[in-house]
Image (cartoon, rainbow, N blue to C red):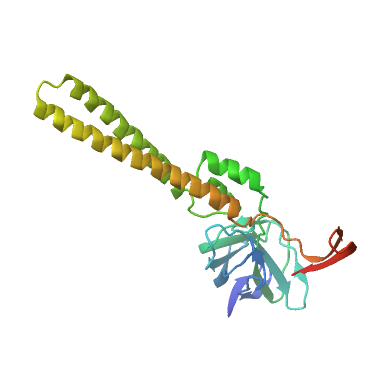
Length: 262
């Protein structure tokens, strides 16, 4: 999409300019996932010796950040280095609508007397993933169920496990306390009917307490097994060709291996 504008700025001799919608690099990777972000609705205006460039950066993920820059070229092919720029430009720019870049042409002391092409350039920032060892993930999951899985998978709602474990454990303690209180009442009861009622209540509360603590333990144990079995997505892939070798005691001969990981 191209939009043409004509501005009259005699002091800067800015006659005409072009704004081009530019694109996100189609194969750029952000955290090992292709970005679907696009720049749209690019337009600009000139006011008080400054160029105001507006644009939308849509379809960007919540965690995605971009490097935004301006490329300004004259009709003769000369690239102008815009130094005094501000706004939604530079690194760590999130997606969203109504983004704005301001170039103070006067402060850069640049004289323009021919047509300009103004491009908004964007490229996804590659956020390095911190490696988490299997042992550390197991330790984290032991303390906070689901946390190790979240680290291994570079995110995810595995914290729900912690809510399940702690919630069930808290419920078990609550019913255990209630059972103890009612047991003391049972010991002080004067009538047989009251004792029978309290005895039934105590047994029911103890059963619920046991079920809840077993549930908490099952979730915690399942979380630990899952953490041990889950692939580690933070581990760098060892790509390329590798060779290996060992001595096979059965055949009494050396064995060589060849492996290629794509």
